[in-house]
Image (cartoon, rainbow, N blue to C red):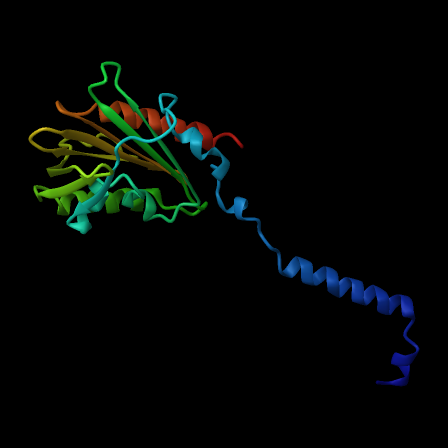
Length: 216
């Protein structure tokens, strides 16, 4: 240390220390987890579900064999939604007006850099690879159905993918929608088939778009 350093005013030294402390804070920001989910926040995940959703859950599909095709049917920790590593999830169920069709809705919010088109493409590839493959699907109550799967012949939206599951006594029509940093999966099942999934997809896409243009 030089003699000049001995004569450095105390006020300057204190100011230098304060400046260093301030610089450290700026150089090492600590982002809050919530800021990583945008434009839709984790607080808005329940708003991704339709107004028809009731509290509780139905008799969900819990396992699928073969496992590689689980994304087509499993409703507990649904693979198509889980693949993107969601920051928040929600879900619920409802039935058609005539109680003939049971509907499960599942929603997820992701980081700001979620790749919706890639998620949809991955789902399409899984559906195509499992086409006509017998799927052994078991419910929460232990009942097992054997479905065959097929994509819908007309895919009229870049933001969604639709497919069907067919069995002798139970049939499902499903859709997966992804846009911005959110995704919604809807399964509709009944003895005679499900609901109009193209319409359900459009409604889900509209909810995503509305939330992306608002703040929580």
